[in-house]
Image (cartoon, rainbow, N blue to C red; front, side):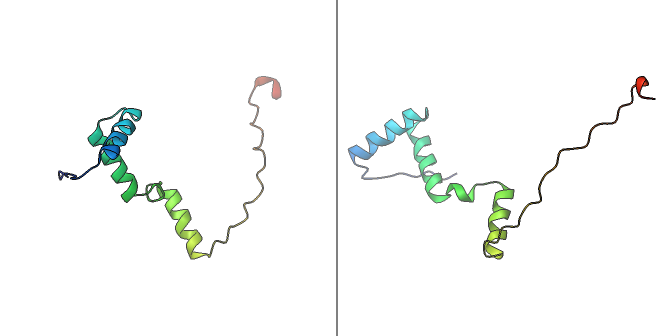
Length: 85
């Protein structure tokens, strides 16, 4: 992992970074890492496989959504009791 040094960080930014770190219960370095990660890898790129596939399929089909069939209740379980002979 690479070490990154930030120069010329003004007092207001440093103070806000410290406040944000305390709110997230982490160190200032960890908070800076979290902010950079969030900025460089937006949350829509971090979604699970199903969400990414859904987004790709919508892009390929020009946003056409298929109608889902109506759901029905499952059939009743068979009764194997002795009284049912």
